[in-house]
Amino acid sequence: MNNEDFLKDVCPNHTEKSKWNKSELLQILELHEKQLIIEVLEQQQARIEELEDDNNEFENQVLSLDHECNNLGHELQDIKTKIEDKDGEIEELQAEIEKLKKDSEWISVDDRLPEENQIVLSHFTGVYAADVVEFWSDRVNNHFGNQPATHWMPLPKPPEVE
Image (cartoon, helix red, strand yellow):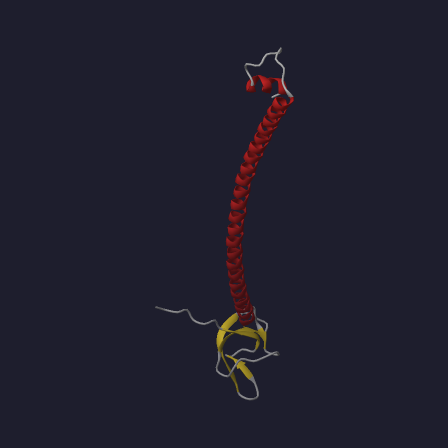
């Protein structure tokens, strides 16, 4: 609002011909200045309230994100624990696989002999065949049934019958 419009609002009965004295003009200008200051302050107060609302919303979002981060941290720890458990299981299974592989490999009679009277699967010299035989030794010769054997392997454990 400009000064002329303000004067018309403040003094509607005043005409162009009337004269203003200095003190009246100063009072009117002070009043106008105060109203302008009030308008600016009201605008600033409205902006402060908007910023406070934005700040509250931002703080709520930060708290929500912090809560989500905490939850994700717990989930991540749970996943790490599960992975460590699975790693342990994998190591155990790999060791079992290696043992089974070792137990299912043919063993040369030059490398190692079975225990006395152990029933084993043996492979015979010159014959592409295998048989389940009992190993025995007479302190001079090692016997795999009635045939000379080149390799042997232990039998697997029998199945569990209910």
